[in-house]
Length: 260
Length: 260
DNA sequence: GTCTATCGCG
DNA sequence: CGCGATAGAC
Image (cartoon, rainbow over all chains, first blue to last red; front, side):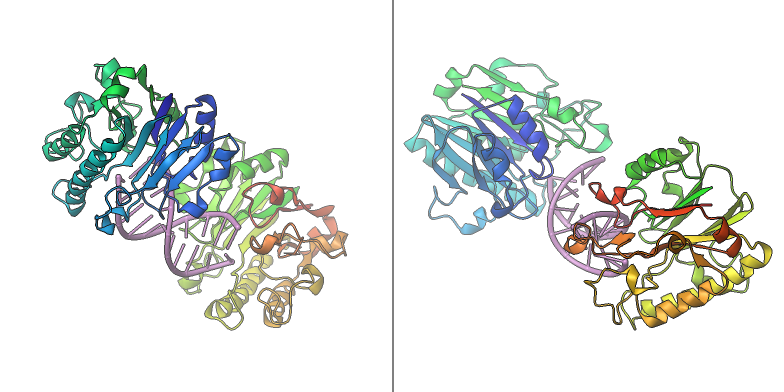
């Protein structure tokens, strides 16, 4: 089973690229982030025409996640609150979480808040959101220990995941508090699929649109697949496909694919 | 000599279409309106690469005119004030006039104000502008009686120039005051080149983007070539090329070409 | 740099 | 409907 994660930075603007990529790379589940579209305007037909089942959770302008699956998913839900019923609904105003089950594997697709800058209100929101995420995963794992967690985490856990032109010290997406919060999430029982197969640097999934970052390979590895132990053992490969980032009018992120 | 007028509704957005059209239709002078770009950002290179000489007068966002000539032009000037030195400079804030001479023929390229709605401030500006235009042409004609006047006039002089779905009575671009003002301009000594060759209705140069106007052929003939007597006698043809209006992302206007 | 929403304009 | 400008996000 192949699962891909891709922050497409507007599914409508990127639709042709996404459809072309999915045609060339017929993964079982494609996890999209930053779809930037309300559900009624999501271009579902383009995916159903390809034989895929789209499950979507979107909002206007910002955020938005989707699961595009070759087989129907079961136990699909969006947001934290279906799993954490007591939760204040404010945590689900931003559409950043969607999950469903295929062949016994629970796929969780995330768009972690960016955090803007260290110490900002959005930074606090990001840290708080990661705390909720931990509870969410702790709950999910009780009923199904096979979880494949992926998405745009907006965090690079190790310095090797960041190009060396960046002054990492207290940089957003690399600060100790963010890394600590993410490690705390992963301590629920997840391991990084990419690092099972590759311990090299200069493997990035995101390059800023500005300053010709892609051409100079000044990227970050912030899009991840994290697997619970059974799935981690089962994983056959995890690769970053940089081809879509080379196209004209690309997303600033590129797909990462794990094979289970 | 062939002269074309085309309101391109942003020369930058339409650049590929304009270059393709000019390659297929190598007219001697292409008169553009609504270039919507300041002079330093005008895509001159695309035209010089084709062997044309661009003469431009633009502003940010709105208006903007250009003469694209196969031969260098002489006596080029933009705005009314170079010809009417006493004029208040406010009449040249909007870039709507450019002129130059080729083979003894003075080309005048206009983007007449739209006028918004009857009785509005913009309507009064349009009427005032046409008064200045008359003085401008009266002055020009003194030193050169061979004038080819073209552009987007935003006025249909006769009901036959307007599709019959429009309630013409007191419609902007068809009101009696606008028509009177334009007739007054033409009385300086100009005749409509198109009507030398064609007396039929349903010949339009502009179709509103809204309400699928082009598909239903609900157009207006508001882009004109007006000629002083010598040139009118000399005119060989005047045709409207509706092909560019059929393209994807077209201008709402299409070229009109006169052959002298 | 790129994308979205909103606005003025036509 | 489609263009450009602007503001906010990332």
